[in-house]
Length: 172
Image 1: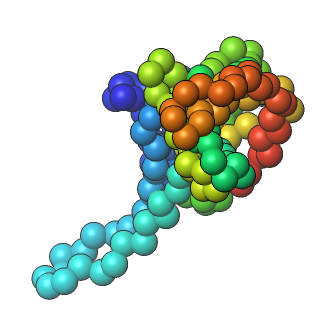
Image 2: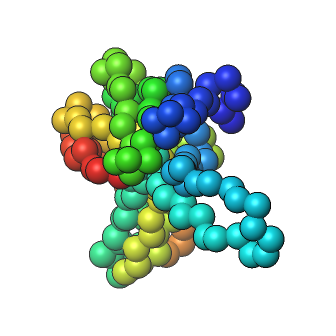
């Protein structure tokens, strides 16, 4: 989780700041209502407009098994060379998340690790995803192991794959 001392709110500028935020498996959502006056009116209070925004980006991978007679199993899927720790702000005036990224590119998003496996039946597809800090980078890479199993569930082939990954900067 995020420690209370790492979350700040500047009421004068309507800005929320997350200091030294580390990505986990939980989404980070922020909302600011802007300036509101509370009167002495009895009855139903007026509506409060809230601007909910996702501070993180979801990266989704979909694997398609075009084979008609084998099962595909994906293992050890990860994104390498990411920034997974940063300081982020959200301002009510712009309704945008802004991240100060240190560019160290040492983080890893372990999507499937250990005993975790994404199984894809013949002529089917299956997906898996992870959360990352939005970052414009041509540095990250993806790596995984793909295994094919025949109808008797015997391992037929295993191959390791790596590829460069471009994560475009997105206005949140």
